[in-house]
Amino acid sequence: MEKSKQQKSRTGKRQQGWPARLAWAYLAAVLLVWGLGEWVGERTVPTLLLAYAPPALLLLLWPPLALLAVFRAPARPPATLALVAGLGYAGLTWHLPQPVPPGSLTLLTYNIARGTQGSAETLAAQIRAQDADLVTLQETNGWDAEFTPELLRRLPGYHAAHTGAGGELLTLSRLPVLGSREVHLPETTRRFLVTTVQTPRGQLDVVNVHFSTVMVSGVFRGQVIPTRNRRATQLDRLQRETAQLPRVLVAGDFNTPPRGRVYRALSGKFVNAWDAAGQGFGFTFPSRLPALRIDHVFARGLQPLRAEVLPAGGSDHRGLRVVLRN
Image 1 (cartoon, rainbow, N blue to C red):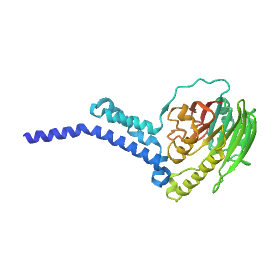
Image 2: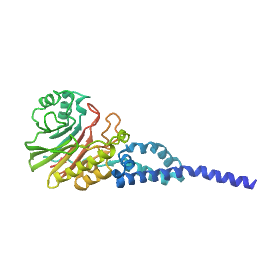
Image 3: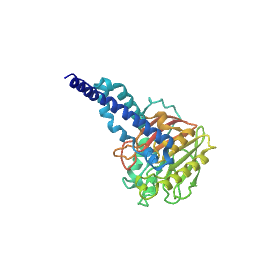
Image 4: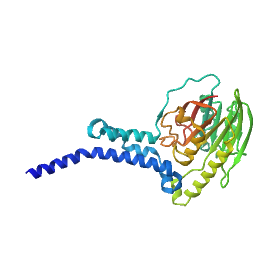
């Protein structure tokens, strides 16, 4: 009888202890995934895919962990730590809105998916509604050759710079444009577009970018390593092109989440607008159910004051609007 009671006691303790073990296991998993994605990242194919996987996948266990933190006292400490770690890995940030002084600049960056999910009229209305001084658009090489000309006709007062005839990058500015140039990238048709504008405080360089995409399907076609190498080349070229620019904004579709080698290198040279002034996760892709933050604005010589992700509409991305102290 006594032995039976002891067995029941041990069984009961094990049953009571599983919530805490689950919470500790989740915390360990988050820290492991974060460490591999951040510090190993693009060096191996598995860790590259891990770094670029939607962080929302780790948040699937967030609701049951929250219940454990509320209703299971023994599991409360590890569950709380696991919740905080999960939200941190997903990129949650929260900054109070800063006052916007006169002379501040507003930039909108937006991958418009070649205009296949909206019209030039709709996009022009979106741009006007954001009252943006600067606009960097990606994938403007639409299936409709008249899309970009029609967009420009609907945006009087904006000066335009673009990559080549029918190129995929288009930068719009209400400020005077002093010049623009294309930066050709090896082993790809992609380019950077560098536009110099005149602000009340002097010249400002705006770099419009669209980095190569890491596709999970590329694993089966042997494309991940070549894509990784192209992205490394693009990063190196971007760093060299901007190294001597005192006031610069780099904006666009980086196809890069806020972790890994590319993001860490950029964050070491620039201030990421969302990290400095955003509220929430900042997910921009896919537009209907966003789970990745791959569109960014990086600044040097200007202070991000506000950053917001726009509602879905007209693209598979969501636009990112940033206000900066000039």
